[in-house]
Image (cartoon, helix red, strand yellow):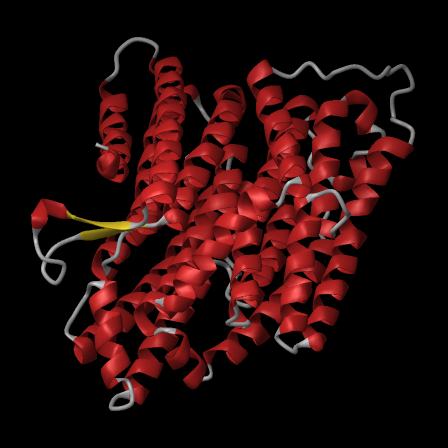
Length: 495
């Protein structure tokens, strides 16, 4: 039964996505309840799966008992189980927040459609995490791209349609690039199963180095577009800033990370560390990662819209993840994977806090947030926790991410990259600290305001407090995550 959990979760997500449009009566309320309940149950099942994999080891799941070279195969190890649990649990927190916020964001007629799209989006993300087949990864990737586009355009405004169109065009280019890379790898290996392809390529790569280099280049460019790696990030600021707040949180915290996980699979499960290093790929990744860390922060400094600033911040944070990947060491990979989790929590906290400000005060301009910490103390405390994590203040998960990454770059003999990390952290402080200072230390525009818990709907407050606590918990107890991602790094490097 436990070995079927990945399939059961996906079947449940897809089944409920089909069921929601068939509901009668108060479809909006029913779709909210179904989504939250389903995600809670799924997270419990995936937690059971993590325990089973930890105790009994990794396994592969062959659909229909077909051999791996002709059938669909899922690879379930400690990291894929944990990553799927993280995705579903974080989505659960965002969806709890959305049960009240979404009424403020989109028309009531579109609410049930929105939750259908979210369930399909999560279905595709879980599939991408577990799949051990390149073609099925591509299919799930396309579903993810289309549903991501849809949860942006569900807010019926001109800017949303333009952002969704830009997202669709650029991600289509990325998809075609990935598909061409898959075709070239299939041409030289004769397999689509990642494990079998990896075994084949390890034997023949010296015969076809140019083919493999070109194929890898196409795939990395395609995934870089989808993961918003600088300078291929141009779709992200408009998409993340204009989308409904729950969509912004899903896109920035989870969706772009799934493409990062896909890159890890391609580089290690399909190619292997020796081939990747032999082709000179790590150096190229390091250049783009360092550029993103710096320029993403520089662009964020110039923003006045709070959600747009957070969107550019995501470009910089993706750079941290790829910087860890570029080191090709156990410490570097573990640090990058730790930041996947760390940034997911911090960016969820930041976007939900920004959404609460827009919901409660209808303010998006950073210059209008003077004294808002008095009006919205819970919201701004959660925002401050996550913002200090982005800067790297001790006690936060962001500090631990940067600490692990700093040790990793020094261990790899790359002290110049430590300078990039420190400079990026300084730039983060330049645009996050003024918001915190304005919120708590400046006089509010209205002199008659007294500090009290803001009158937000309880689901929104619950989601905010929960994700804020998780940011602190993973900061004070990083081994909760680090032990798992270290095991994942060992798995990738031994592939």
